[in-house]
Length: 376
Ligand code: PLP
Image (cartoon, protein in one colour):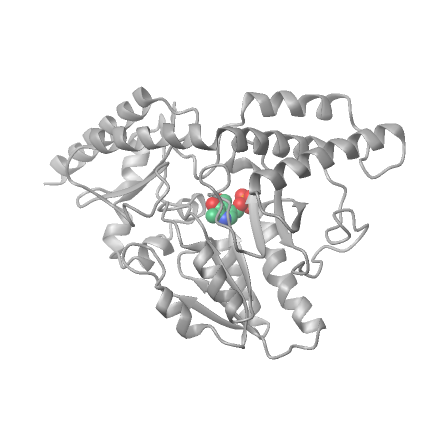
């Protein structure tokens, strides 16, 4: 099996599994109870929180653990709208986002629009980048929140987050950044007030994410109860998951440059190996090199995936692959339906070797060629 689906999820680092084990096997205490065992668990959760905060690298805010980045994004969007409503809606009722955002942002924004918020979804240029002049035209005193991701999960394209945050603040609004595919892979761009991250994209466990919140920009709670996470997000946290996330964040922090250099070499190797006939979707310069989203005129990508069962790669996002819907990200770049169906995403990272990547690219190219010949 050659695993090339790093944007869907990453293999759990051995260091993470080792660190989690005692918290699953024997250290079962509730981190919110006052016993000595409880205190130990609480201390482990707090060490993990500090590690995630350090990997994010921003000052003047706090991390709250959530059940996923999807929850963190829902919380940031709905909780910010709710806080504004509680304050008596000072005229700021508008959310701006981008057509290539993850469903966790787009669908939540659509839901908020159904609840009476105004929504603007900005288009992108054919290379997947947003037009800053277009954003500037939309920013005014009616805008509450601007939500833009740093690294796109389907095409790897990066957005100028610090510049967007600066423009957003000038208009008196808040900025939310989905940094799920950025944390641990590239340096996070400073500026946003709210940042959503996920453990399983950085070799940590599934089922835990986090929201970094600038002091004063905390959204209203979405989940009410015991108020365990900073009084803002209720529910007993899992020490095992927190410790796993913290260990993954520490590793990512220590290895960002090393992992990036490795991925950059893999990117060049993949480019050489897949051969002619393939076009890269999205910008070739403003991108994270651990994502190669390519299309080939005559290829049926779903058939390619079915033909190569021992190579894990995808059509785009894991969600798009499952639904059979054409990717909204590729459509936003202006690709025709047929082109979206002939696009594949290869995602690689820390544990990918050049040999396996090259072998996979060659086999994908050969299978594409076979399809072409058969269909001719
Ligand atoms: N945002 C982006 C860019 C993602 O790639 C993902 C996961 O696919 C998410 C958000 C959601 O993360 P989680 O799986 O933690 O809910």
